Image (cartoon, rainbow, N blue to C red):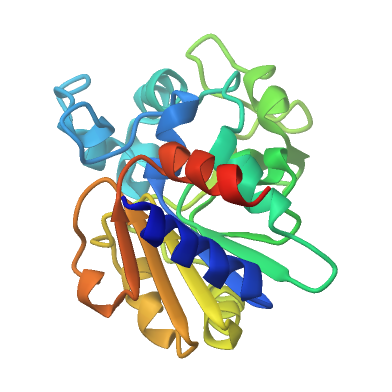
Length: 250
């Protein structure tokens, strides 16, 4: 990551008027939330109660093994004490009166919103929204955790039905309205910045093909299938990158 690369990256971001940022798990690793596919990631862990992580976070498993689903969910996917890191805060600070910044994220942790980003599109939902499967009553994360029964299953105090996280499980489709918003933002952007994603999860990774703007930028620890399309590709921890950007900009 040369000084010239950082200057070029800074100049492009500074000049952008319609910036879309596409983020994956890598941006939240510095906040203490493990990613999925690295050696220490969620999917690389041993089986949990005889099932793989991918099997457990499926719609079928949620229906058939609800108590075990929630034990895994609480132990491996919820980080209520996690705080936004420098990268989340940097993206929020990019918002100005004359620069629109839309964050399209694959993450469910809510850290972009906590950092102050005002236009966030969570493709896979968020742990901070939960709902009763019967009456539709809404609960935040604290509300979900406050209504666990003896088996560790959150239940609605109104009707006793299960409270489900508003996150997209395997076998469930993405919300069409959310996808439409994401594609509109990507298609309208003059600059697209991709951060912390391997770009192997579909259909989300394919959304990059809707970008027709001038500058495609990428920050990730390792190479991705879309690197050849990027004007600038930086292979480093995103927090290291934004600290360098801060040094010459903010």
